[in-house]
Length: 431
Image (cartoon, rainbow, N blue to C red; front, side):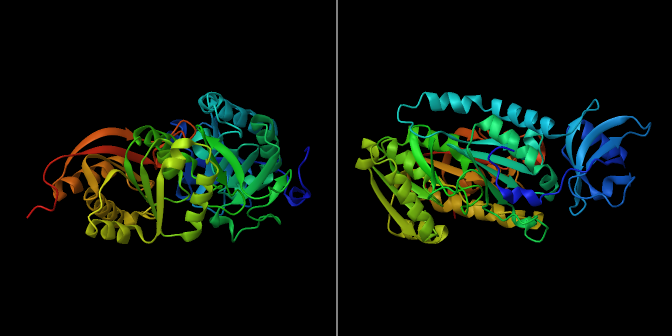
């Protein structure tokens, strides 16, 4: 493996043994409809009880005919993670490389947008592999300019990581690869690998710079949240930039400033950014500095406030502040099924607080990244909260995942966002 560090030397090799697996009829139907997960309760039999993470498992139907192939995950309730359905095939490094190359090719529109960028000095940031949705369950690959970040959500990938690395290098043309490990792997054997290890190339000196549209951002690929940046809101951020000209903008849950930077560069007269994390807002300021050659951004008055979003919205309301464009992009509120009700209540509260700050005829942008809250539930919650508040809403736009975050099964859908015009009229809670 050219350029790979010795950190990979301790990885296990893929097992030559294949597991023969029988599943319930319902599970087989789901597999054939391309659902990527088989739960432990759906496994009827497996010929080797000592299967280890990453073993290739072959699913046979009741007539002992080949049905599908997956990777065995004995320490997870998701016992088998599916790779292939249909005719028999060989799962090896070449197979993984082909899947990764196909996945990157599907992102061509991202590269086309980048080519049209007049300011682009660095390469684009994009998701090259979106786990189950690209047929590689539990595996994420994000690219920032010349650096690829591989994030593992399951230990099934350790025996196959060498092949994945080769495939990522070939498909993305990256010269550096950073490994990130999900929290659920902290108690597993990671074979001497740690979160943030540079497994190919050189350790980046500081954040990695990349472009989003015409703008430059930084990604902390070794210690930052996710893989260093939230790439999934790209399309919504760029649309906010197109809407922001001449507007006063409020960015709540501003994080590292994606919406703030796009709004300022799009001609906003002012942006007020709110986040509970001071260090995160310091990154926001650096992202502004990376774009200091954009005249509109320089002319925009930008202020920040380190405080809880709910508190900030209340303070701004009591101060009588108004904005032409209010963006509310909170973190996930529903980590489990039991918290969905509380999540919907939080979205409703945010809607009511935010509406009171929107100037007549202004726009509210509100998003949810809670996969357990369906799109229907989210949009119903927001519109019902607006009606209860006494506002008249006109939906302008409803969005989901950008092209590099495809969704191929129900559980893979998490991001949803709406753009609403708050029409002139009565504003305040009905008696």
